[in-house]
Each structure stands twice: as C-alpha cells, then as structure tokens.
Image (cartoon, rainbow over all chains, first blue to last red; front, side):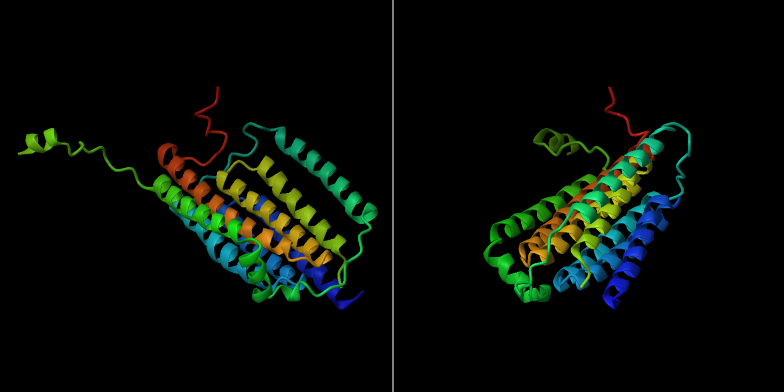
Length: 182
Length: 100
C-alpha cells in the first residue's frame, strides 16, 4: 500500500466520521464543530487532488465563514431545544436508511466495479495554483463570475432584510401626520 | 497516486450521509448543515474528475458552487432566525404554517 493511499484512507475516514458526527450528535453545537472538522479534512483532500486554491477557499469560505455563521445562529436562538425523539415520524428514519443503503450500494457498484476510466496525464491543472485558476476564471468564465458577485450582493441584502428585528409599527410620516403632531 | 474511483466513492458516501441526515433529523439548523455537506461532496467529486480529465473547468465550477452555498446558507439562516423569532422553534415538524 503506497503512502498516498494510506494518507487518503486516513483523511477520508476522519472526514466520514465527522460527517457521521454531524448527523448523529444530539446538540446542534456539536454538529457544527463536527462540520468544521469535516470541512478541514475536505480541504486536505483538495490539496491531494491538485486544487491548492480551492483548498484555501474551502478553509476561508466554509470553515471561516459558514461554520462561524451557523455557530452564531445556534448561540443566538439557543441550542437547548432537544428534538423529542420518537414522538412522531417514527417510520421515516428507517425509510431514509433503507433508501440510503440502496443508493450507496448502487453508487459503490457503479464506481468501483463498472467504472473503468483511466487518468489523463497532463499538466493543465498546474497544481490548481491561484494563477492557473484565475486565468480561466477571468477569461472564459468572466460572466458567471460577475453573476456570482451579484448573487452574493442580493443574498446579503436579503439576509439582512429577513433577519432584521421587526420594529414596532410607527405611523407614516405623511403630511397629515406631521400636521397632527404640531 | 490515489485512483479517482476512491474519491468518487468517498464523495458518494458523504452525500448519502448528508441525505440521510436531511431525511432523519428534525432541527432546521442540522438539516442546513447536512445540505452543506452534500454540496461539499459534490465539490469533491468535481475536483476529483477535474484531475481525472486534466481540466480546470471543474475547479471553476466548484468555485461557483462555493459562492452559491455561501448565499444559500446566509439566506437560510436568516429565515431560521426570523421564524424562530415568531414561533420560538426550529423543529421542522412544527413549521407547518403553510400546510393544507
């Protein structure tokens, strides 16, 4: 067994265990911390896949942004709401696990047994360095990049509007109201 | 070099763990986390195939998916905050205002 394969198996096992922890832990805050570990392990896997820029982006966007945002929300709305287990929807977990087993067996069969693609040896990736990704991003994909910027702006404004604490209803400052006040 | 198969199988397993989490958990926050996990497994698949075919387009797609995921999680968390302010719950079984 080569060293890189051993490394992949160790990192993959940690990331799978963290993913299981996200689903299985009772407290939402534990789930968020498992999610952080999961994202960090995926960033390591991205480096082994010649995607250095995306590994850095993964750490910055997911571990630094999304998980922190989720932790803020958990602390804001309180994480003490324990789900009442087995209250209702008692049969759906079993259906979910059955469907998951069918899906995993199908995918593993297709990917491990039927899949026969061989890697193309080449140097176009350039290790996924920022320069290589940036040239593609800013020449061939400039329109989607600008659209993503607009999407982020719209999402920012929408999140602000949705999460804003609703202020008490004030009378509109129309001409009549102003004259009534005076 | 680790074969691309293994990365694809790992991505499939993570996706399935996320899907089972979405179907079994009842807290809206944890469902959002599981959706993020599923998005990440797709990212892993795209990056693995990008190396497989020696083509940078897959990595650019992953970059776009990350932008969409950030927007999605921001709006989703804002909806959860706004709703929990009204009803004081994040249990999706009790969020049934629009149910027929």
